[in-house]
Length: 352
Image: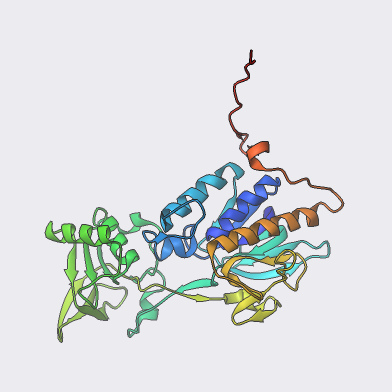
């Protein structure tokens, strides 16, 4: 069983920054996320889209913000349970919690912070006959690329027209035997450099581009051997070992909706006058997953909520122990890994 001070559900920017603020208070964090990598929407949906409202950054790419947050929290050595969904929660007599994932992984925490953004993300699935059969037991339909090595030497068909479809087509062109990118339009909604890179790879024969077109059926009795593609009313067959539809993700509150929390408009009600705690003592909700009067779904607001949440958890874990807030510009930062970060001392020199 994984032991931690704060169990954070959601590895988006708010959840990641909570690790830093908890670390300043010497509190250990562990993060659960249903996605296979940290970053939430920023990493999965638009890693190359710029964000303009992060203080101190006139513009920062979503993927770069995630990278910076991961670098910032590295010194506090958070644990991660990725690719799993927090499913059940049990509050023990001592006020601590046991959270179990859909894979049976158990986590014991002194406090729980739900930072699930808009909730758990489920892939938008194309409406195709027998797709449920092929998405099970590695029969050929994948909605996430968890391990690129899985596709080495294989024939891959990717469907989609956004950043994820473009980026994975580019990446897998150097891994797979063949990559076919199918999109229902000729135009792509992705980063310009990604579109241009796909064009270069198409010209070089490393990616086969089929537009405007849609995958309309599967071939293969035990697993996928090919897909049927409709192009301008005509049909063609593309041999493949894996079909990866990347049509984005649908946010849902998921199993958390059954935890006895107060829910309003598919979000979790919190006490914003104090510490963003829910109606259950010891469970907090921060970031886009919560709701309160005047709520703004902005990353910078999530950062603020995470900071106050951590202060509250510190007081909850250490009743009666006074904590004096110190500015990091003065006190520096002591990482769990033994590092010490502090401002350089000014040169001491006498004045005549």
